[in-house]
Amino acid sequence: MNIGIIGLPKAGKTTIFNALTGQEAEVAEYASGRIEPNVAVVDVGDPRVDTLSAMYQPKKTIYATTEFIDFVGGAGAGGSSPEDGAGSPRHKKTASIFSGEGITMVRNADALLLVLRNFSNPTLDETYGTPGPSRDLDTIETELILADQVIAERRLERIQADHQRGRKTPASQAEEKVMHRVVEQLDGSGVVRDLDLTTEEKQILSGFRFLTAKPVLLVLNSSEENYGKNGELLRNLEERYPAIEFAGNFEMELSRMEQEDAEAFMEDMGITESARNRLTRFAYRMLGYISFFTVGEDEVRAWTIRDGENAQAAAGTIHSDLAKGFIRAECFSYEDLVGTGSEAAVKQKGLFRLEGKEYPVKDGDILNIRFNV
Ligand SMILES: Nc1nc2c(ncn2[C@@H]2O[C@H](COP(=O)(O)OP(=O)(O)O)[C@@H](O)[C@H]2O)c(=O)[nH]1
Ligand SMILES: [Mg+2]
Image 1 (cartoon, rainbow, N blue to C red):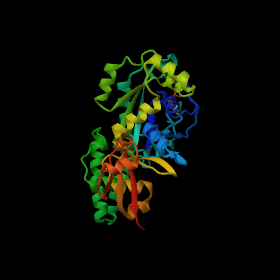
Image 2: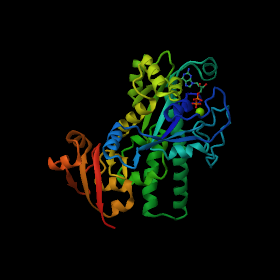
Image 3: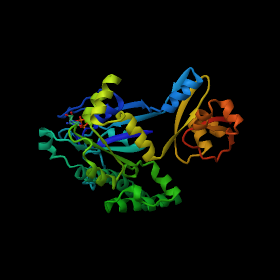
Image 4: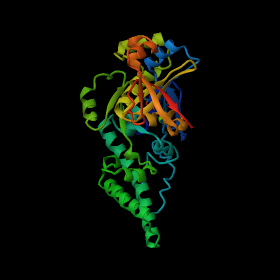
């Protein structure tokens, strides 16, 4: 899973990125002018993996991972935004926050984590106004729409120009049709996500990686003082997107402390778990991801797939050969393994199954793929 962190300048994106990854990327009240994104791959903490590792004593234990990309916007850094390069001069609208090189990486993300400032600071309040998470969400949505509009319009013009030159194919006509719908949707301030698309249309659009097609999660980045006291605000935000609250600055500091010290501070704040664990669990649930496991003497490992994917697709996440040469999946559940105490006991109780290609893999399944290439 791959998550792009976006938001208005100084909303605390890098602070949240640091809290989630334990990194020490530069956090700044003032612009620094750097534009490359911060990227980190972190393990998805999962107590089930720890238990499996203790049972099998493998040489290697490998957790599922999540990649976070902290997109460093241009415009907020004192208007130093690189030209959007939107092409034709007809495109007056430029997406000021989401222009520049970093956005290419965010376009490749599976989901957007949108950070909303909910803390005061004299300098920031003066430059960007007092905290207004709902207002900021509106602004960001508008900017995401603008960024997609530039791409969709440009593409549509291109197809139409080709058609005028007599270059018309069934594929180009299908693309024109769906791109036209995208442009209309965006012109009406709608998002690509809300379009009712056929599988084929989704396929046509997938290469454009529209930002407004991606699932969105909100982070309400609250000050240490008002953390946990924003119930109504959170509920309002949740009417639009799934939302989670962090005390960004505080949690960034926690992520740098020794476990024991961190736990004492967390208790004081009523924070039960690290930002990373809370966020990954939240993201898995909201984005519909699940984990399955492979076990053995060599390796215990967690893998991430989308809920509903079948055994063959799951095999493919391990290796494409396993999907191609798929015969059967040997399968039992983590629960049954822990419940009975051993693989032998799982078999004895008739809880060990052989599943075919179409079997929908469940969260916590332990799989061994039989294959033949
Ligand atoms: N009080 C408070 N300050 C924060 C919090 N999160 C970020 N900041 C401050 O806000 C400024 C901008 O943060 P940064 O993470 O660099 O924002 P970015 O531009 O969105 O990446 C820095 O001075 C941070 O110390 C927070 O939760 N509480
Ligand atoms: Mg930053």
